[in-house]
Amino acid sequence: MLACSHAEQHTVGGRIYRLRRKRTAGPEVVAASFYIADRGMRAWIRRGVGLGTFGGPQGDPDRLLSSPSCRIIKDQRKVRVAVATLMPDRVQGGIDSPTPVYIKRYNVFSWRVRIASLVLSSPAFRSWDATMLLRAAGFLTPSPVAAIEYRRWGMLERSFFITKPVDGAVPADQYWWRLHRAPAEARRAFIAGLARLFAALHAAGVYHNDLKDANVLVRAGTEGVVEHYLLDLEHVRQRQSVSTGQRVKNLVQLHRTLGRLASMRENLYFLRTYLGDEGRLPSCRRCWRRRVCAAARRKDLRHVLRGVS
Image 1 (cartoon, rainbow, N blue to C red):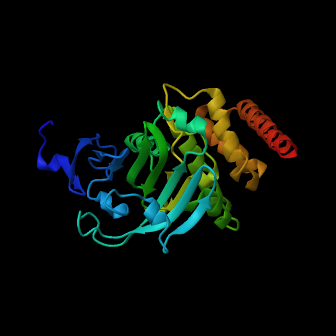
Image 2: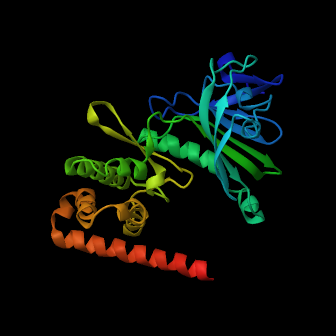
């Protein structure tokens, strides 16, 4: 066993687990630790949070999901999302008071997914890595608390991504509805903020596979600045560049949700802001508008045909 200092060890149920530091990726993600545990459990835990906080000596978040105080937000075949409360762990230490958290449980819903997990990282670990990537690039995400996965014979059984809530934040569509009777300047400012977010992501080579309004939390910050927090991060990737097709796909995802609640003029203003200097040309805006609308119609048609079949 390699020698390691007391600060590089963590004790759970009488066992000592070595931890590996991950580079800091933002002011609130400080020296997160990787615990190597027995029984197929592995976890990235935010420093200062005991593993037993999540329920039992092995820290199984399923115990939190079954607690009476837990509130289920989404329960689908692939994922379950809930709001629960972390209680102080008097044995391992960590948090000092009850703390609300969001728990996203990724289910292994087929044998195909289970076999693929032999060579693929879990969705929870991918979300943790994406959080580090985004924060290092200057983008906002909810503060991560833990990413925990359970495997058997190397195959994934379930995984959990746990984050703190963003106080005062609402999904982008809800924020937009609040601006329904607001002055045109306030609506244009919100549209411009979203457009700059999309442009900044793509300029940084960051591709989010599902960039719809529900996956962007919006909060009014200090001095009228609007903050954007990204959710649903398990399919976030960073590349040398984001292709035109991927850019169009992201624009379609927003167009099919928030875009349909906006006027034609507001949608064109979004495109002009998103495209920057390129968008000053009306012909360029019209070209991108045709691409996005055509792709959105094809997407709608596929949904209709899938429903008929």
